[in-house]
Length: 80
Image 1 (cartoon, one colour):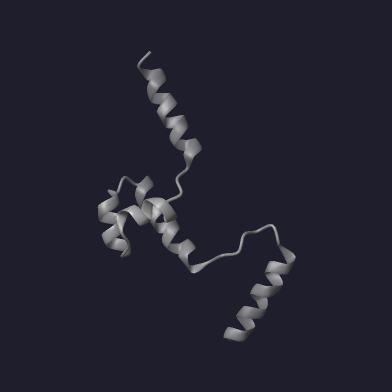
Image 2: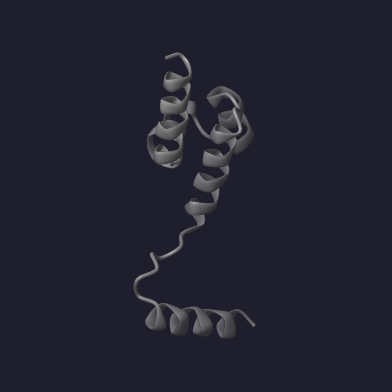
C-alpha cells in the first residue's frame, strides 16, 4: 500500500510541477497559522504544538497579510 501511494505521489508531482512539494512541517505551520488567525496567544499555541513561541513566529506562522491589511484599513476608515 505504501509503495502504491508513493508511486501515485510521484506521478502527481510530475503532472503538476507548479504545486510546491508538501512537507510534514507544513501541517504544523498550517495549524499554528490558523491558531494565530483565531486569536490564540503565541505562548498557548507554542505549548499546544510543542514548539518555542519565537520559533513558531519565525518559521511556521504564515498569516493572510492581505486580509490583515484590509481589516486594519477598514478600522482606520471607521474612525474618520
